[in-house]
Amino acid sequence: KQEVTQIPAALSVPEGENLVLNCSFTDSAIYNLQWFRQDPGKGLTSLLLIQSSQREQTSGRLNASLDKSSGRSTLYIAASQPGDSATYLCAVPGNAGNMLTFGGGTRLMVKP
Amino acid sequence: EAGVTQFPSHSVIEKGQTVTLRCDPISGHDNLYWYRRVMGKEIKFLLHFVKESKQDESGMPNNRFLAERTGGTYSTLKVQPAELEDSGVYFCASSVRVPLGNEQFFGPGTRLTVL
Image (cartoon, rainbow over all chains, first blue to last red):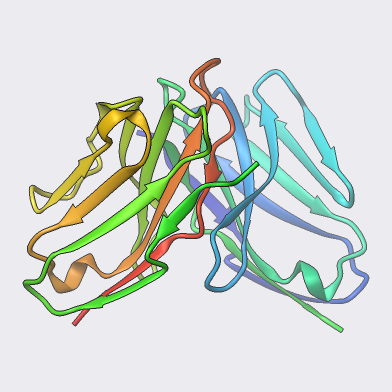
């Protein structure tokens, strides 16, 4: 059974800092890994999807890396801004490529 | 292109009552998923439709939950009778069918409170 863990559970940083969010998973036989952002009271916004054949994926100030063999992914946020404050979730699909298993999320606060 | 929509955004009901949640996926998406997040826990999978067929309902908590997707378009999730532990946020997501493991797009969720 796939288990996904995110560390840290919460993070508070000053504006402008670069930061790394961590995601680990127990079963390395994954199709891909998806990073989401959730704002309070809102739905999930997909940030990046990194395929199992890829090592990293970039979108603006976000960079996600994937190391399948070690069961780890990181989300790097460059030059953080107060607008980046949200909960960040990672998720991997099951063996049939369908249902997602989510981590508990990292609640990020970027202080002005 | 419209995203995944869910209705209602909030629902407050009393224990024992019935509630029906609705999800409209992105047009053309054969895959439709229901997930739930209860307070303090991870988001958990409930079930998966491919068009109108239930592909996987292993995450459904019990037989008080009934999901349908008539005609392979929108889906409903009915809770009858609702219990206190059913409170949480119910998310719907959709994706194209192939290839496997496609990106899932989520709706804003329905926050259900059972009193």
